[in-house]
Amino acid sequence: MELNSAYEKKLLAFTGQVGDLAHNEIKTVDLNCSLPQASKLLINPVIDYLVVLRRNIPVGIVTKQHFSNSKVGDINSPNEFVSKIMDTHLISVQKDKPVFDTLIFMLKHDINSLLVMDGKKSIGIITQQDWLSVQVNYPTHLIKNIREANSIRKIAQLRLESKKIIWDTFVKEENAVSLTNIITVINDAIGKRIQQLALSHMDIIGKGSPPVKYAWIGMGSEGRKAQTIRTDQDNGIIFENVAPDKYGKVKGWFLEYAEIVVNGLHECGFPLCTGNIMAINPDLCNSIDKWKEQFEFIITKANAKQLLEASIYFDFRCIYGKKELATELWEFLFESMKTHNFFMRHFSENLLEASRPPIRKWKWRIPDFLKIAPPPFDIKREGTAPLDAAIRLLALHNEIKETNTLKRLQGILEKGNMPKSMADSIHVAFDFILKLRFKLEFTLDTEIKSSDHTVDPKDLSLIELQKLKDTLKTIYEVQDYAFKEVTGLSIPWSMK
Image (tube, rainbow, N blue to C red; front, side):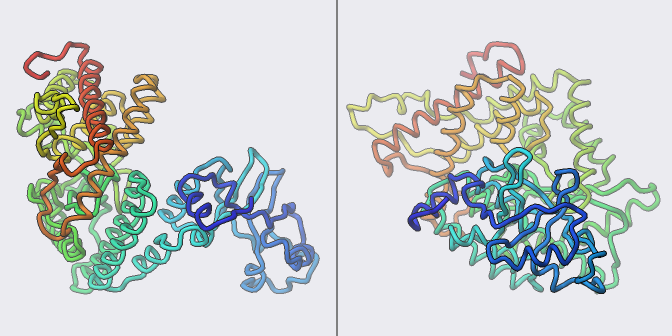
């Protein structure tokens, strides 16, 4: 596919399919292709890649560089085969996969190239460099620099650079969902590198390596992969079970380690959580069995206030370390909810009591012809939070381990437990409310008033105001749907 303009290239970056961007300078060869034969094929200037097949299934890839880096004694010997030098770390993607999602995946897993398939047929290759050709400011080099940074100060500098990339991307594309994906990749890379540096520091000061395997988990917006540029820390540590007589020492090691990581994140622009939802909190740095006890308490004994505060835990995902520990905790959570089925009723009521969008208030129902704007409102507390909470409730009800709101929504839809029309409306509402929040954050000093999420409808155009009203109405209806779907009951009048 030939792209006729820079605009078309940039548009493709967010809306195109990976097959449109992949270059097809490839040729397939069998596993028993000799090195001399392969070398002759790569001499051809229109062939950059050899895809190696075993019984017509791609199993490896060979480039000119593989020959120059080869340790094979005689690459001209007809008895040496491509299997000796091919790269077997081959991951494929279907041609209709969105370009943006594909390259986010490549960055997240540090993959340089992907084989593009049309069904079972190899049709091309896509690399991280391809993204640079369509989106100059894409953070490929930024991620690489973060992963190689040798100090917290350097990472902090790179995070400041990332804000310009994020801002430029938002101004050009105004694609809020894609923007949160970029922020997630950047922030995850920062978090992982800080932990690697913290582990090295612990070793340098004589504390040694982690006494047992562990998982550093993100919760809240970090867990949902929905961080914005003004996001604080929500994290914890799950470590493997140890004997009672060793527990205190092991926990002490992880608390000391957590302090280094949390302070490093703070230095890099991630404020400390005012609610102390951080790994330095002894209640959030525990063995897997202690975490299970904590979840059991939340499910069986937590009052309304405790449940509201603890709901943030149910967005947890592993950021670094042993993912199996997080998976085990998810499985325990679902089993425990089955045993204590009254919990979901309690949790559903808590959802509605916590916050409702203001759309039913009389000041929001004034006819448009009077040209009286509704009062300011908190876009996080009365917009994004209620929507995230409603989808979280439905995800827990459907035993979906995914934490991202839109992926949870997709899982609910795939299980046939939501009308597609409602899911489509939620997608529109989610993107719009997120755009408003980004606009608000980009217009404020990101280092002060970090808790201020007030939006004044007077600052919106008439079209934006109508979209906002439609969005808040959708969120309100989704809350109602989630309550009825989970409890099977009508909503109490006091909660309407």
